Length: 370
Image (cartoon, rainbow, N blue to C red):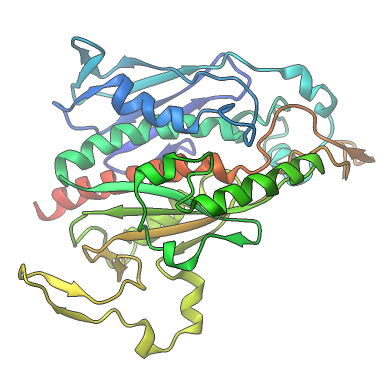
């Protein structure tokens, strides 16, 4: 068992640390013969996650340029064709400032993995958290781009998109929920928000929160459309269970919902049942989607809807009480460059994790039923 590997038939293994020379990912199980343009099909997703693009994210300046080291045949104009062998992608770290963490060599940051990492391994990388740093998620986004190639081949017309739908107590209007938003709308603001007015309000909120030396949590919604019915399994290979595991593995995520999620506790059976009629195309026509596109662990063919909650960034300027490795009580504040709301850059990470799960399940489905 590897604790750095995710997936079954489509597997990824990430490597590297936040303040090391580079980070990267090995993608195994990608079918041969898939052609992609590195700039358009991989780098474009990394650019969405890249830090330092607005005043609302960390000012660490990382270009996050992906290099393909194996598993492909290089063609013209930055195009590559997969060979079916492991694909390795690397991303250099160029803007580390390890000195910002000099006061943390023996002291645990509250809310971080510092203590738990040290309790488990007896050693830890205090420079930005090492493997527990959200810097690792760049590897997932690169791998997710490869997963999208598999999805495009096996489920033509399928799409994945994510949005920030809540920051702190301020949510977008309810009618915007359910993925009824376009890429153009999301790309028109710094928050991947489907509602421009809410995005403007979030900007004001975040400016005040940053000046106060604090941070704020958020909710991200990921929607996949155009996937066939039948993905998943009734028991231990449930599609929704794998999605929940994938989203929960993202740094700072503390809750995951499929479909209506926790809200179904307020519904009656009459309200919650996704009734079915016969569609004009001969396929089932669902009259609602409270289940989020998954019933009994298997996809229904509807939009697959997943939301996750991200806690406030633990690295803040306001002093917090803590202890050091010797058990001595002390106060600490975290220097360095940090996101006041990690939920913003979690949007492309959530999209990537959705893509990784779906690519894996498409291959598993083909292997089981042909």
